[in-house]
Length: 359
Image: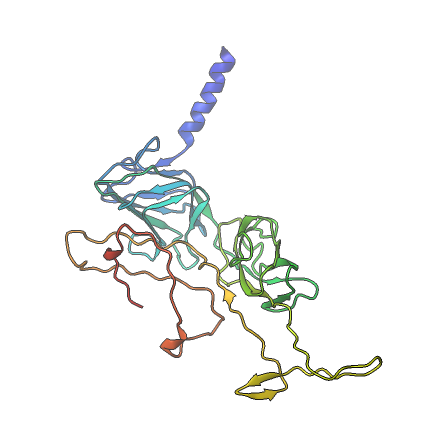
């Protein structure tokens, strides 16, 4: 019996030492500040759904110098009409990191204060309406080092090409390797190709793949077209690459021949010339058929569009945000409106008539 009581005492002390931050014990409608490098950040009801008509905010500040607050959400479920906003700074006027509504993350959703944030703090604001609720969130609070740079390129060995283009024949299996460089490695922490998370996006060339320590993947190219392959890196500190790491890969179809000429006898020599017809004139060149590269979805965090004021029509304060598109070459600019062919959006909304968009 003594052994059982001793074990219970140790477990109970461990529970007491864990810091839990939630509404209303830590945060309220007037705010709240936590200065620590550990603990658990919860909604008001960790054993069920959060409540209706809640409105509170707060700030997490690192208790160790030269550190950044990192929130790692093991679960994150926000209902329609409810919003969890996260800001990169010591109050809710700081730049927005995420505005989360009608959202479910199964785990591993990480928010880290940016290198341009000298305080290393992260602030949040939560509000719920009078209708739909969900189970909320469970996040670990920690202090991380400032981010170190992540750079790299995708290459393929052998005769598949160099630079940002990889050429293959139909039904070839192409190995793609992310060659990473960590110019600031061991300044604050260790980065290696084995301990970072790779998020491979193939633009339709097979299934996307995510995992730790997978710098090389292989895909079989079965269609005569181009693909754009991206990889996003997240290191052990929770930092992501800011440089776009991509490569274009493609295969052409088999050539078609239309041979015209005299009958050949054994031993005769024939000269074959490739020609094409342009405006009725035969020219000695070959005009290849072209295929565009299939673009993968824009990488990065989702864009959350909150509900506007429902009692005022139209909304007097439009919502605006920025989507960073990483599919362009460095230095590329629009010189004419005709340079933009189309915009594709995959959105979810209760009623499309609520939305007015301009470009």
